[in-house]
Length: 297
Image (cartoon, rainbow, N blue to C red; front, side, top):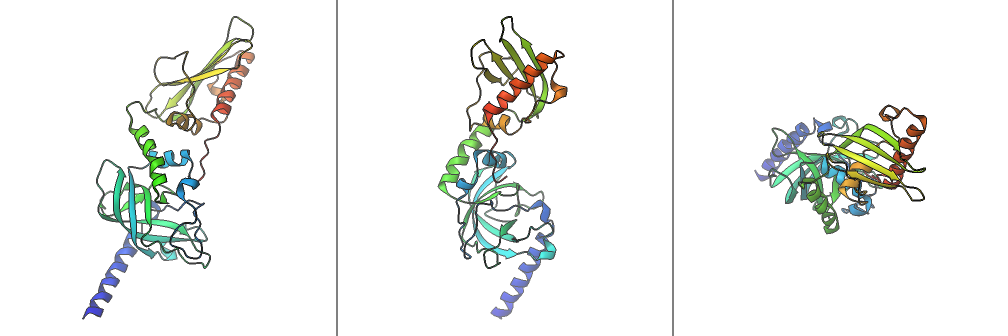
């Protein structure tokens, strides 16, 4: 009777996995592009903290309600007809995992849970074997399905490492801090005003935010001096405001959200010289911020 029982159990599980695989678009994510698998090995060839930039980790943490450390216990390949949108060279896996720790999250996570993930095929054209691999997942709960999670985007699954946890911990703290900077969504207005001396001016750029909280940039120029710029995170425009530290959440909010060029309709100046100055000062800020630097998100 035991063989029959195991056979029936296996068929029931297959049916359950097939049903869970239907809403694939709400679960799909992929391992970072730098995590190539070699010779069917269980472990990624590159570590996640080397593949992901600071901006990648902030972007993932910002859109995730949970950050989970888990161990993969079982994987099942989803049939191609049940995996719409699957990229060539990838396999869609239904993963059953066991929780090791909830690194971040306002709600609990089941001891065992399931999710879908797209992973690159090995050199032999087969899905990698991930059983017993420890992963760090950026995810969101699935309404009405406590035993499932939804990865928060592509590259939301990483091979776990202490270094990765050390990198993500300060980001998570910064995101929930009382003085966390608001999410910048664009530019509202910009105005450049020449000073009384030749070469003296001040440009203010007012930013729009998701919460409506005021944020503004100030660029000041003095004769025979390099331009100086800073950001004010509040109602008061601080003339002594400083520019954000690269690799900080304040820097991320600006570098990864502001457009490359000052929109013409946001430039309030009518005088051509003042308009050019505002455009020039905004370009200076963008240059000083540097590129956002996302690599896997």
